[in-house]
Amino acid sequence: MTAVLNVIFGPCGAGKTTYAHAFARNEGAVAFILDDWMARLFGPDMPEPLNYDWMLERVGRCEAQIWSSAAGVLAAGAPVILDIGLMRKADRGRVAAIAEGAGLTLRWHFVDAPQEVRRARVAGRNTVRGESFAIEVTPDLFDFIEGVYEAPEPAELEGAVVSASA
Image (spheres, rainbow, N blue to C red):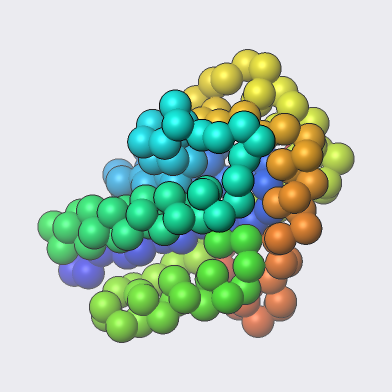
């Protein structure tokens, strides 16, 4: 039996990381959460103010290591769930191409919530710093991410697991 590569996407604060943790517990999957990797590996060195090019370079390094580790988990027969951002359609296309090239069974999971709910959720997460907290998302960073995010076209959601959190 081929293990499934589950990939979650959605806008900032939609509940992707909470969903990934719950999915991993319920399905016996291994969760790879980009924000956790970034916070642990590069958080202490993060420049103030945050430099986008600095961040992108490190995101690329983390993604490469996540893919390497996830490939080993999938080869061992265990399912994986990736929470690696995928804010733009091109990013999602790149992941689909990687999965296809590796002969992986890919299942998309889309999580969404209204912007005001997401903004409030992020502010609360910054304060509580619970299971889904990895890095502080300031109001300016939230606005920046909102500007980068590309909502999926209906075709992208065909066959996807869609979850609207409130």
